[in-house]
Image (cartoon, rainbow, N blue to C red; front, top):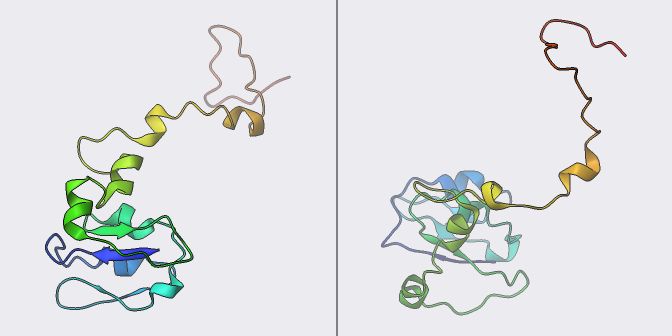
Length: 126
């Protein structure tokens, strides 16, 4: 559940307000305010989209937990979901390191093409 918007880090872009699927935030002149915390679905979208890592979403979806901004920042947890998925300059994208073979289970097998034959602009023959 969303627990913190860091007024110190926030740049007032309001991206979190725009991307939240359950309208948890109210827009202000600077840092958005968490107004409907109980509506948070713990989807982490707001934290992922925050360009300055100013948000903290607790993985505990059903209960609010006390948080300490300084402690979260010192431990590297503030905005950590964005870092985990590799969003942001200089970060390794999660897809680049994901070795999960699940996609092979749902995609049809690739057709084997004869060497030297281009399928660009030509119909596939059996």
